[in-house]
Structures are given as structure tokens and as C-alpha cells.
Length: 274
Length: 189
Image 1 (tube, rainbow over the protein chains, first blue to last red):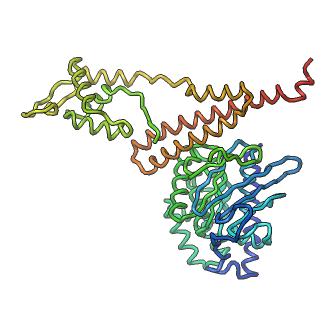
Image 2 (image 1 turned 45 degrees about the vertical axis):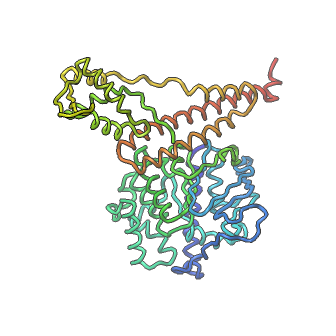
Image 3 (image 1 turned 90 degrees about the vertical axis):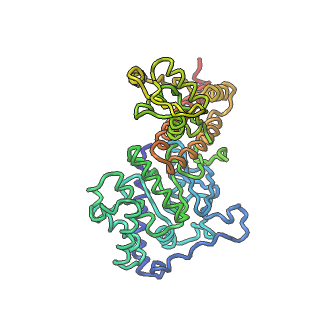
């Protein structure tokens, strides 16, 4: 099991979603500034699966890749503003669970609810708009567009969402400053350190003020000191903005920044952690 | 709140604090508590008992006496012998903790011996460890450098426990499955 597989898949899916998002933005009003997908209310209709009130909920997800079962009845509930760590050994299915929650891949069975909406009932364009407007993503590495400057990278999701050039640039700058990396704004990702690059990636995930940030081993390629700094900044910013975070990590010290942990083992979530 | 017990010699620590300059016992206690005593502040009795032992052994001397009553009128200074003693203490490495918390190890082994799930033991222990680690992380992110160092020390140790347990549980579960699987039964002569 290589750690590259899931994140490469996610990055590819994310890039695809950005591309389709761009066309969706020009074709529909979904991406117009300030009129992104409706914010999800927390009160849902009576819900037999007990996901009512959750911001995000996975119910009995199953997913196979070929003959290999990745998820085998995984369930998870994330409340608004909550920081949840998904832990488990390599190949346990924790990244697949994250990708299903984010609508990057669809489960073979089971359902993901985002507020009152079911992801499977949405069109691909709808899910794409959701990922762009309400979700933010941080991966282990390789997520910044190498041809763009760091500031342009952070402004990118805003531009794709229809925000004007000047406003996007200003918000990107402000977000970079909040994460202490405004000094690399004009540099390209290849010219900054790993720690700086991850902070830029966190800035990009936060800049759209998402409801949920999905972070898959966000410190996996960093040394201890830089990893701690990225986690401190990410969780601090998320708490201030009441943004929920779904964090995949096998590192207990990284998971300790969360509010609670959920263990994924053999494609199932375990509830011993209570 | 997890209790962080740093295995340390109070005498050597007070001597180290005195190297910066002469102080009264009260000052020493305060400065010790600030740096090392978050969970276990010193009692005044401990401070004065330690200082009188150091005095008897010639590692500190009385630098001045303020007129008046009470134990705190003496100001203490470190002696040449005291400085040498601190230096010697610093050259002695601390004994590494070689053994895992025995209760935890015992539970893991008993779970395996009795056919129960070692991963259940591990997951419960992980939840317990992570609760402690979360408290330490919160304290660290809001704290000064001393807090960060003390908490990081504890965090790395707790993490190491978890990694060892995870590896052990995976190894032993795999071994037990291999022994119990029907293929293994058939393969036996």
C-alpha cells in the first residue's frame, strides 16, 4: 500500500473538479459571487438513519477497488465546526472514506449526507460546485499548481467561483498573511520550502470560507516542527471560522489537534473511542 | 489532566537556578514552579529542607541575612563545589525508560492469550492516550516555550507507546490468525 495512491487519485479528482467547476461556473449561476450553493441548514427532516442535525454524515459506506474491499460498512458523523481525525493503519480505508465524504468518489453502497442533501442524488456538476464552494482540501503534497505563484494558487478557487481578480487577490493576500506566509506570495511553489508550501495549501483551502476542510495526511511530508506548525495554524483558523475538519492521519500527535478520533480498520469505523 | 512527572533531582535543579545569581528560598520556589512545577509545585518545606542539605554539603552558602523572622531571611548563593556538582549532574545521561507501562502490556498479552481482540485493547488504549495527548496539545499551543518542551516530551512518549502497541497488535494478531486459519490446520502434518 503506497501512500501516493489515494492522494494522487484525490488530486486528480480535485483537478478534474476544478476544470468542470470552471465550465459549470460559466454555464450556470452556481458559481456567481456570493450565490454559491445554498448554505446547508442544520435541521433536517426526520431521518431514519440518525444523521439529522449533522453537517456531514456517512451511513454504511461500501466501496471496492477491483477485488479489494476498501470500505466495508463505514459510518461517520461530523457536526458543524467539529475537528475529527480518521486514524488507522495503511490500507484501512481512511482515505477512501474521506474521498467518499468529499464526493470525490462515489461509494458502491451506502449514502453520504451533507446537511439535508444526499451526495448520490446530486449531479456531478452539483457535487463539483459543492467541493468548490463549501469544501476545502489539503493533501500531503503536489496540490499547488506549479506554474502559478503562491498568491495566484490561493486566489484560484475564488476565481473559479467567479470572484473578481482584484478581490480574489486581496483575499488571497490576507489569507496568506493570516498563515504567516505573505512573504512567499510572489514565489512559485517550487521556490518555497515544504512547510511554507503546506501553509499556502492551507490558505487556499481556507480562502473560500468553506464549511468543511478535508485534510489527507497534511503533515505527511513535513518534519516534526513544520508539521506541528501547520496543524496549529490549520486547527486554529478552522476553530476561529467554525469550519469542520476531517483529518486523515496515522500520526497520533497530529490527531491530538482534533476534537475526537475515529478509528478505521479493515474498511469499518470503530466506535470504541466513544 | 495528565500528571507529568519529570524524574528530576530537586537539589540539582535548585542549584542550577542559583547559578544565575543569589536568591531567597521563596524566589527559588517560584522560579522552580514556573519552569518545572506546573503539575507538582514544590512545598516550602521541600525547598528549605533541600537548601539546608545543600548548605550542609557545601554546595550553597548563605550570601546575606535580612534582619527579621521567618525562614526566608537568608539569601543563598551557589558555591564553586555547587557549580561542579551541577556540571557533573548534567554529564550523567538519564536512564532510558526501557519498559512499557506494565499494566498495558499485560492487558495486551492477556487479550491475546485468552483469544480476545488485541485491537480492541489497542483502540481503547489509543482513545485514552489521545485524550491525554489532546490536553497536552491544547496546553502546548497556548503555552510558553517551557510548556511546549514539557508537553512535547510527554507527547512523544505517548505516541511511542501507541506505535509500539499498534505494531505489536498487528504482529500478534497476524500470528494468531495464521495459527488458527484452516489452511494452517491443513498444512500441519
